[in-house]
Length: 345
Image 1 (spheres, one colour):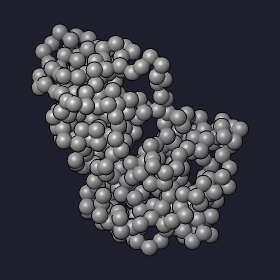
Image 2: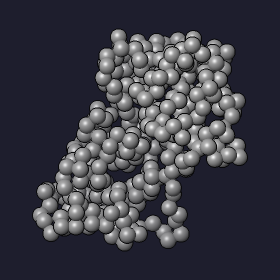
Image 3: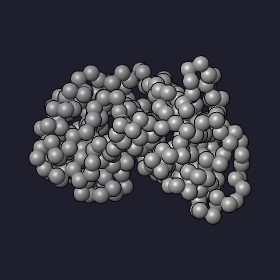
């Protein structure tokens, strides 16, 4: 059963998953912050069968959120692992199993615990269960939030923000100095079928110039072929990711998050960059065609998805430029308070 209000909160919490690569890690960041909000004084351990990007490229974002990593644990690697001793046997007040593969759940459930929560096998192995009438939400972060609600009784609003390295914040400030109202545009995606037509991004960028804002294109390595044409089409646009004098040659998603924090608003395709923008929690419009927005849209405080289906189509070309421009106008009415981000909250 979930912890009763009269019981003290657990002093240790373990979260178990198979692994996190960069996309998974960005997608699940809101859940990580929820866990810390639910257990502000507990020692939180992140256990993975294989590796986790939270202990790698995104580790600096975990400051204040996760206290310990147990990656490459091998727990749940195969059915045969159920017959082997666990690599460690610390007792946890709460274990939250975020995956649903049965043998992995059986393996992590062997860890000593006071409360075990898991959605595997229809919650049959979980100490706390949702009511039979509860509908499973489509978005993974919402599903994870439901697990946390079963464990903690509620999901408070996260108060601990993502802490970016100060040198990175300073470089982002040098690339996009205080003053202008910046609007981010991310025209790329892992698959071109998920890309809104480039000429419509150009139309949106030109509309920002007309409104006294500065369009900022975020281009990855696969979109560099677009750079000359975009510069010619929108001379006032900025391309800070390509400023080697500031950044050098090494790419990191933290850089994009730091730049995004300078934006008053942004628009992106369903892509990894949209989740980097989401990690910055800026006013955001994410465009969807062939992929379901209900499952994949970034979790942000302000903004949301625009889908081709809203306009009677199924691919990205159905979304008109004017509709996106109007949505951005509503999100970017007030320029970002640059001073608030200089504190790296």
